[in-house]
Every structure is written in structure tokens, then in C-alpha cells.
Length: 131
Image (tube, rainbow, N blue to C red; front, side, top):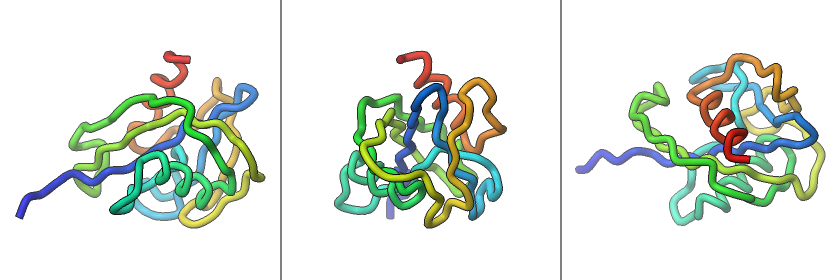
């Protein structure tokens, strides 16, 4: 049987100089801040997965605005080889509130970010560079 990498999505949501971050409720990186996102389900597009995960974790409905990049370092996630498609997204509706596996969901000043889980600092850096 082939071993294939898992696929995830991450959302970079910036509004008024602030970025949406969640505090992880579960391992890996429990208690650390991260971009909202998660695993793509079988039969789901990455865009639909992004909208679903952001809504579940933050209460925000978003639209995908652009692809930030694909991050495929086999060591980026301690659970195994996980490839993420990171997207810039814009808020279309909702009120920021934590849900599902997020212990907290907040707007952070983009110039004063906390230590981030996974490779999310690089993803944010890439997103800000391209916009």
C-alpha cells in the first residue's frame, strides 16, 4: 500500500492590520497560536475545506482571495508528511469566536505576533510579501 501525504489548508485572514489566529486546543502544538485551517476531507475541494475549517474554528464565513503557496516540507508537521495549501481569505460574515479544536480565536496585531505552530510564521511572511 502506498503512503501518501495528508492534505491540509490554512487561512491567512488580515483585516485592518490584524490577523486571525487560533490557539490550538489539541496536540500537536497544543496551546500555541496557529492559522485557522485543517484537513481536507475526501471529495472536498481545498477551497471548500478552507471555508469549512475557518467557520468551524472561528465562526467567520470567508471567501478565498488568492493562493499564498503550497508548503510540502515532509517535517513541517510532527504527525507525519502533511502538505498544506495556504490561502489568503476575506471575511464575508460572522463574528470571531472560537469553536471545534480552537481554544481561542483572536485578531493579533500583524507587527506583534506570538510564536506560531508549524511553519505558519513563514506562511504569514509569504502572504504579506505578496500583498
